Image (cartoon, protein in one colour):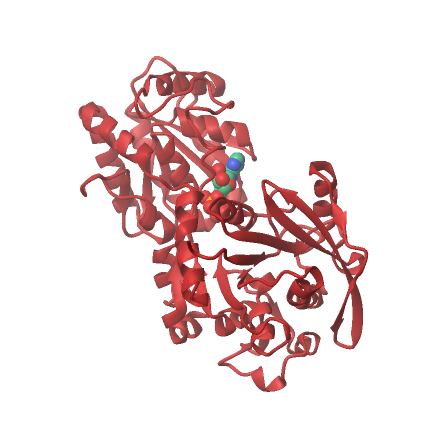
Length: 487
Ligand code: ADP
């Protein structure tokens, strides 16, 4: 039998303790799946105020009596360790009130940074490397996620983790748009040799770049889909780091995210009107009727019910939806449900569209977890015309609920949705982000829906059979870890 792997995941956030986005879902879910597959996977995050409070509510928190002494730029921080086991996974929180116990995670409000983030995540990286000796548990692999953990690979490689000579480092990029770019003098906080501050290593456009540091010094780099791993090698998607990634191409690979198949389970979802399965799809019709009633849509229609759940930002390509759908609605072939918030211009566009077509288009502005389940369950089609998409989750939720996705062929969307034109397709894909290509994908989808119900149902069954669970996906990570440590 293979020996048990020990993997420490280090990140700026992890569910259920601290979350600002999808990163937290991955960092919380992947270790759980690894533990179920007999890997000793643990998680370390900063001891934010929200994390410490959430932990107290969720279980028994053990606080280590000693502290680690972590130096940064001449100042020594006392860093304590609080620990809790949740869903069989051990979480460590690095407790340092002057750095982490604040109202926000990365800044006082979303999209604003704290002035001392360079120090906060420099100390975090050093404390992560000091942790194994402190807790007397040495991992084979440290898996560092995104810029917040970007200094772990160079510090490990340069011998900061003196007690970790055999530990290897995997670094994952969840969204290359966020790089953690710091003032060059912040190099002093990291204590790394100034000789490394050059354009092949830590420097980028005159700044100290934490994400680049992770990419350059890690043993392996992963991103959240195969296609995104290729895309970030190009100027269009690389956010300025494409040449760095090209240089390190040999160690970059993509593994798409999994989904929580317990939370997203049409056979057992407390949020939806009627359970259903691939064997018996009849409950899906009840879900559609209930959704139409809930949102005030006309119910006596054979129109295709189309859903959108999204942050309303340029990345998601929803301007294409605004430009494309009206003729389908006017001809009575489509009803549209949109859930989301964000860019005021897009919000205004969806408000206008809904106001012009009462009973046929609804726009629910805001965030609503329950409604997102009901839209997935009740819709026939889901739209995701993203300009770029590192992985994307909703297309996978849609397939699990027999809702065929129409997606742009990019990033994780390209990896997870196969066009019905191809054998065993599970959705519809289109190429350029352009109204013509998008509407021809909609034409194909509506044509199949309206005239070929048997083929439609067969595609639904295929989509529902795709296994995107973390149990399945985590095996790819395990293989990668084992390659690195010859276990
Ligand atoms: P991104 O992380 O770029 O926003 P993903 O598709 O990877 O896109 O993940 C988005 C997640 O957030 C999904 O779980 C989706 O259901 C959820 N979500 C987005 N907007 C809303 C909303 N308005 N209400 C409920 N859930 C939402």
